[in-house]
Every structure is written in C-alpha cells, then in structure tokens.
Image 1: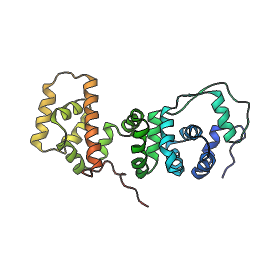
Image 2: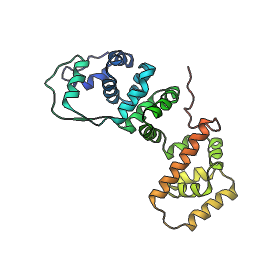
Image 3: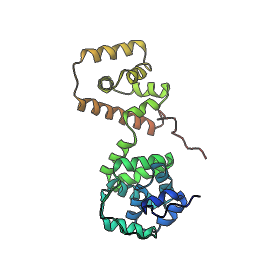
Image 4: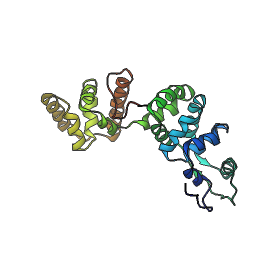
Length: 234
C-alpha cells in the first residue's frame, strides 16, 4: 500500500485504511465517534464498516449519523486522538451526516443489513428512520424494476395517484411506466393527464411518495422485487 502523505488531514487518513481496520479502531469507541468516522467515509466503504460493527450498535450508529450536524473543533480533536495523530488543528467546523448520508451508507451495506437495522431504528427514532427510508428510495428508483414487477406495482396503485405521479416526469420515464400497461389503460392515463391543467409540484411529489410507499409494502410482503440488486449472494 502507498504510504499516505505526511501532511494529510487526520480525516483523510481514513481513505488509506481498510474497512476492517477502521472498524477495529472504532468498535470500542463511543457510538458518536463511530458515527463521525463512518460519516466521513465514502458511502460504499462506510456501509462495509457499519456491517463490521457489533450488530447491537448498528441502529444507534446509523441514528447518530442521521442526526449529525456541524462538528465542533473539540469533536474533531477527539477524532484526531482516536486516529492517534497530532497536528496544529483547525478552528473551522466540519459538516457531516444527515439522513441522506445515512441512507447512502446503508445503501453501501448488504440488503440484509438494511432489513435488520431499519426496524430497530424505527424503535429508536421513528422520524429519523422515516427520513432515511425516504432517502433510500426515490421515485426514479422504480425504473430499476423489471417490466413484470413494475406492471404489478402499477396495478396496485390508485389511478389518481398514477396520473399525478406521471404528470411530473419526463416523457421517457412516462413511456416506461405506460409501456407496462395495456394499450387501453395507457391511453386512458394519457387522456387523463392531458385533460388536467398545470399541477402543483407538491401534489406530484405527494403522489410519488404514495406510489413509493405502495412499492415498499409490496416488496416487504414478497409481491414484487425492487431493483436488480435486491438479493445478496454469499
């Protein structure tokens, strides 16, 4: 391995470490320190480190990542001590974490980790868990489903919700959805969209959230599979 530059920031040293090394370094530290370290990593690496942490600690760490905000100089100094490095330090704050960052990190872990951690996180903090869940899956991700699964989803979505959801997407995305419907049903949706005037963005987003919620429900009960990478292989 190439030795990291001596002038590298303490946080940047993490980029030169293997996931198992990082996990070993922080597994006995306070969960807040673990959260700061993992939040500083590339999400794919962060997901691997999260998986290597004790299972009982994973929901708490993910919760702390989602709640992270500005990191004070004192906290950065504590992190430097954990990394066993000393520099002059900086008086600036560092912005880390947030629900989106937590979601990215969880996406970097295996699906089984998400399925194990999220229910426990809902018990710790339902609001934060909901934010992470929403960030984990957005409307465009529905396009990752194959035609069979997408068609099943469409059949389970209220027509009004479908019209509003497709009203706010570009023609290529709209065509993908309509292509999974019968010609008659697709024509009906097109006619309904054309008859509507301009629609508020809030209405469109609310409908898309409702459609995502239906997809998640169907996925949880095994009716559909969301995305090509749904299963883990070992």
